[in-house]
Amino acid sequence: MKRIENKISRQVTFSKRRSGLLKKTNEISVLCDADVALIVFSSNGKLFEYSTQSSMENILERYESYSSAERNLNTTYKENWTLEYPKLMARVELLQRNIRHFMGEDLDAFNLREFQGLEQQLDTALKRVRSRKRDMFCKFVAHGEALKELKQICDS
Image (tube, helix red, strand yellow):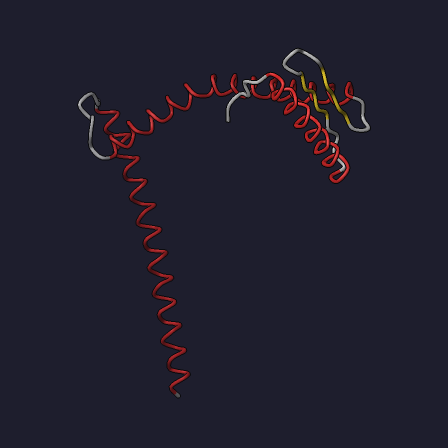
């Protein structure tokens, strides 16, 4: 698609397309019960406008308030993100460092107290893992026993 070079052809096309656009604007308004505003400026600056039963001013006011509210929301979101991002990155770095420590890496700068704390965390984690494993094993055994009892009932 490219600009129509012939000025008369361009004006005729503009007029036809504008009429079609106005028709479609009216159709969407009537069929969908939508408030619609259409503003078109021709190449020589002439204004063509259409609005549904609500006035153009009312529709533009609604647009401006919506647009303003969205801008404010986006600004607030960006401000919050700007404040939150460094905190989140610091948290990620701390968690990554802790994982490395749990894997036995980057321990060169540890003192005795830090080693004792790490050992205690690992002991606690190991107890939780063993407890969960024991619970799962007990459920598995109980389920297996129930299946054996059911099989005995069916066989008799």
